[in-house]
Length: 503
Image (cartoon, rainbow, N blue to C red; front, top):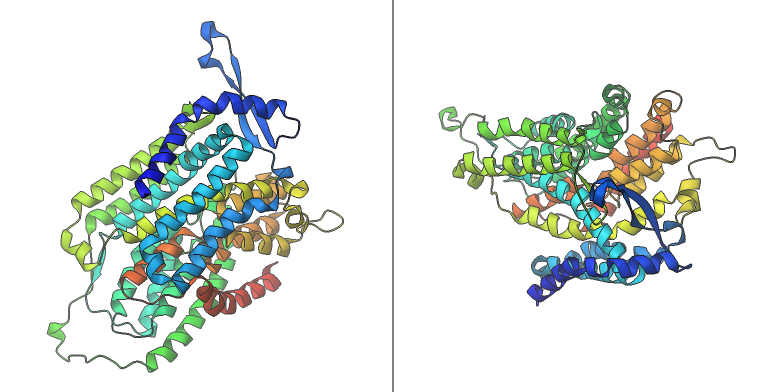
C-alpha cells in the first residue's frame, strides 16, 4: 500500500505539466480565482531571440480561509498526541501518518488552486527549502556522529553546566544543529548512570539548540537570512551579545540548581581509587573535526551570486543552492568513508533520528505554505491581526510586541520566513533597521532565535536532540509534556524578564 501511495505521488508530479496549461488558463479567466500570476521573462527560451512571457502561479493569500491551516495543525497534533496515546503505533507508523497529512494538503490544494499551482509550490518548497535543509542536517548529523569524547567524565552538575555552556558557545560558530549534535552524545554518556536526566537533555535544547545560536548569522537560519538581506555580520554579534549572555546565564543558573537537586537524589556509582584505571579525556575523530568547518563554508556558499542554474515549472533554481547541496552531500560521503567504525559504535550512531526528522519535516514544510502565505499577506490578510498588533495607533513600532509575535510564531512555524515577515513589516530596509529601529530588529532577531526552544518543532535540532536521547534510553516528554513541564514554566518567565529589561 505504501509503495502504491508513493507511486501515485510520483505520478502526479510527473504528469502535472500536462495539466498546467488548462489550470493556468482557468485561473486567469475565472474572476473568483484565488490564484494570481507573476510575470517571468525568459529570454533564452524564445525562438529567434524573441522573449516569451510566462506566468508563475501564486495563491492570493489575502482571500485564503483559515481552514487552510488544518493540515498543518493536523501534523502538529499528530506529533503531539500519537506518541502519548499510542506510542507503539507512532513508533512504527509515524511516516505513514505524516504522508497522510501531506496527501490531504496537496490533493486539496491542487484541487482548489489547480494542479499547476500545486506543482509550482511543491517544487519551490522541496527544491529551494527542504532539500537544502535536510542535506545540511544530514551532513551535520553524520559528521558529528564520527566525533567522540572518550574518557571518564562524571555527570556532575558542575561538569554538565560547563558542557552545556561550551555547546552554547559552539552554537554561534557552527550553527545550533552542529553544536547540538556534537554536544548531546558526550553529555548522555557522562550521565548514563543517572536515572533522572530528562532535564539535562531539555537544557541542551534550550541553550545549545536555540539561544546559544543568537550571536552570529552562522548560528541560526533567521539571522543568516537577515545577513543575506543586508544586516551587518558584526551588528548581530554586538547587539545580540547582551541578550544571549543574559538568557544563557539565567538558564545555566536554573539548570545548575535543578541538576544539583536531582544529583543529590541519585545513587552514586562505585568509583575506583586507582587512577591508572581511569581513561583520560580525549576527543577522537580528527577527520570529522576538520569536516565541521567545511560544512560552515558549504552553507556560506549559498550566499554567492552565481546566477540561475535552471528553471523548472517557473521555479528558478540558483546555482549556489546546487553548489551547497552538492558540497554537503560530498562532506557526508567523505565522513562515512573516513570515520572509524568503533567511533560511531561508541556513539550509538544510527540513522533513525535523521529519518524521523526527514519524514515529519517533509510534511511540515509543505503544509506551512498556506500559514506562511497568510502572514506574508500582511495587515490585509487572514492573519492581519498579528501584523497590526506590532504597531500602535500612531504607526509606531511596539518592540515588545515584535519580540513576542515573532517568537510565538517561530515556536510553531519555520523561524526563517517568520523572521522575514516581521523584518518586512518593520520596513525591510536593513540600514534603517540597524540604526533608527535597532531595537525593533533586535526584538525580531531575539524572538526568532530564542523562542524556537518553546516546542520540539520550533527548531530542527530540537527534534533531533530528542530523538538521539530516546535512542539512548532517555524517556523524553511528549510534545505537550515538554511545553507544560519545561518550556512554559522555565522559558516564558525568562522571556518576560527579557521583555521588561530590553524591550
